[in-house]
Length: 340
Image 1: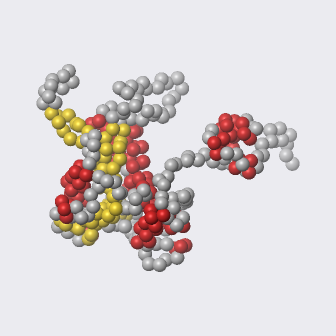
Image 2: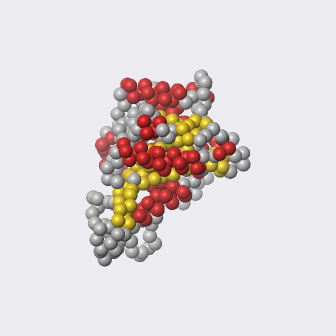
Image 3: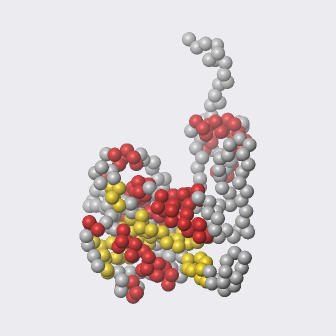
């Protein structure tokens, strides 16, 4: 029998889920607006969020896909399937011979940086020349699928490198900060086809040849990139002179247009690297370049491997959606899947 003290608390406010879905999306953009439309207090909505009765959701803006784009997406996924496996048991190629490359702008700092302080601790004062023009550098990253042995030990981390579009230039005048002729880092503001070709041929291909597991012997490696106008194709004359070197044969392939979710870097790796980079709070461009390289080095191989696993679930959802990007990526216990 319940005691008097147990019955003394207020009864939980019961709210039908339909009362939430009946509201327009524009009236559900913040807790206060939702509480006003439901005629309850904002603290009640907050407690419902903590219990899981109300779920916060971010509305991403997806690329608009036409019928030819969706057809290319489906064909791309079908080419990576093994045989004619049924929908419930789809198996994909291991993709151990793929290298994904992509470009991304990294900014020196965020406009707002969240940290946690102890009571009465004063926050750090941050300043810059302009909050609208934060120094940034474009990087090209190259990743492959990590390898693990039977003991779950990493034998190849898949991180082939991340390379900035910068160059060194000597100063022409003496200043209070440096002398005449001192080499300083300059950012390539306009990345064209020449720059992307040089980036691919000079640092990326040698990095693949140096870091790729030598035990795999001669095998064709596919370098996957998006359809940016600055990217070269496999038929490029200069690329044809270098795409075969020693035991390596490199083939450039273009993923379907308007499909960032079919690239490992856009799918999750860049977000992980960027998060690690901002924790270091670099002060200038040189420090930011070191921070990005260090963040790429600190990215765990298992984290990168999980993105490759998510990539397979993305492709399955693309088939279910008939090439559309209107799908929700299912949440799976990757650690449990890998243990079996």
